[in-house]
Length: 274
Length: 289
Image (cartoon, rainbow over all chains, first blue to last red; front, side, top):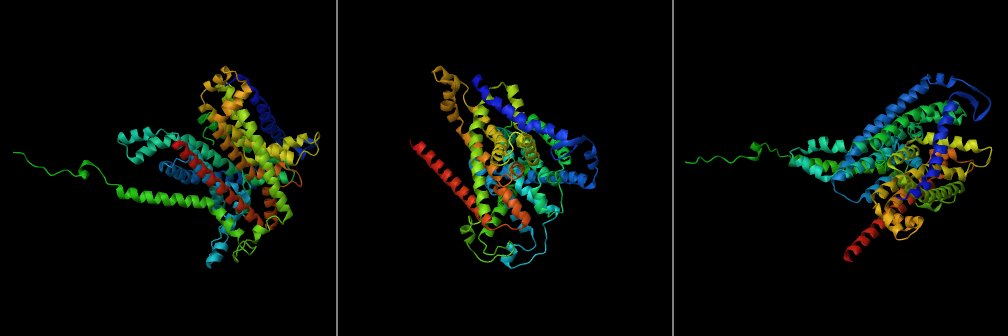
């Protein structure tokens, strides 16, 4: 490509520096300060926020975030891989249609979808009313409810990443594996799965990060019983406690930077991210 | 004298007949895939049912009605929220598609090492937690407050949407750029076309598929965004997500919003089916010629 076109990318580098990198330093700075919101007239340096990390509510939220996000990732990986692999195997070549089917639900508002799922999880809902039955399973407000919500919301990302990775596997490799006497099961574990790890890695990250940090799903499906780290950050900023909020965001950022490094290792130019 | 042996059966060769098991597995996997996809659509189906329910309670089904569709735009705050969402998403998507394509070409012009570094930074908005992105942008925009006191509102909202949609466009365009023949550009230049014109007349047509899928992704992300918008919009400029969040907190969600959501889903579905149909028709016509 023409070297002169580099000029198009340069403003973008500045844009990213100002909007993505600068705030990270602002948050780091705020984490060590005591200030009233963003006014620094009576601000002073303090480590008070770090003491807050020892509060049971905060470390439980961290623990729960990791637990919920890990469970969501594992469930989405198993189910999502299953769907992606079967769609891939069906030799159904219309990638555009697959993409459409998977992203169509995302066109409806996330909050509305969560609310609809929440309604379905009440012991008395439209369906039971319609069928004239009554059930006493109150799912809403429990851990499975939140996990189901997270899985149903973020699994499409896993399916898409794995599908993209599977699509790039050379079909003659599969044929070679069978010719050389592997059973279909061995073929899958020894040839296909290792080659799709790239998609598994990016898919897992795309599921893990939003399920760890979101606050709307635990808020509504947990009916306030379940606090994840996103809820604590949201509450901190709502109460103008920018310092605690920043510290927690910085901790979250460390996890995210870890994920970023993994992605850049397995996939240097972000080919499986979409 | 030759002794006649019994013919060896397939079993004796070590062949095991899995055909029944395979069939069972095949049926199982089809059913399971369908169930999972239905699961993904569960909430949409619920929304559709709620939108035709005459009772405004979400727990009882009265009778079938279309009145919520008729009343869709009679709630003024909802009408405003819908138009704000559509306008900001369309502006952000158009800007992201045009700028993203140019930026992708720019990034692709760098040497491989530098390109990978830029891509690492390009992934930040994509992988960063929504809440952290939202707060980051809010902090930056707040720092601008002394210079532009009224910056929070449509401007910041569109900038924020541009910030998180650009990476999607860039990521969908770059793979297409890689697929194009590196000599195309040189050929155009040799034939005396100016570089920018060569870009628009030669390169852009070759990467249309990537631009289009980037645009689709950008719009999807933009129209559905809640958390980032929540932190970057100003007082009084609500988009649909923020309006819904507020109404859900007050437990005063009108079923009209389910109607809007269902219409949006149906319109999208019909558009996609028509697009598919025209594309297939186009392909057939192409083959005939």
